[in-house]
Length: 86
Image (cartoon, rainbow, N blue to C red; front, side, top):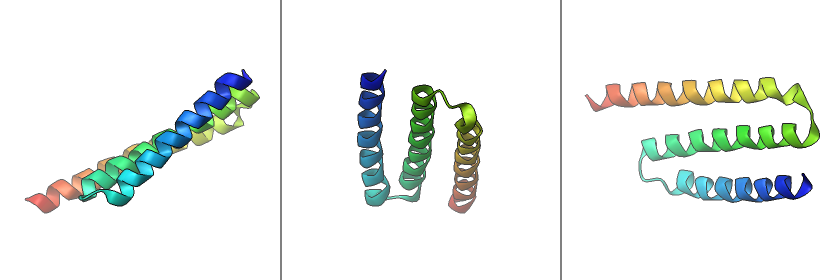
């Protein structure tokens, strides 16, 4: 289990680094929103890996909260962005 958790952690950190670059270098607001939403999903995935590795289920409400905040944030920004384009 240690090897799997280490591989998952390395992949999640590399995905977070690439996504952070996308957020910082994104030419438009929508690119940045997608990048931040991806960072939230990567964070939730990291918490899920930690929960599986440590057999600790107390982080599961945090995962659900992160998923909800990520979805609501993306929906709100896209709604206001569509309204601004008209």
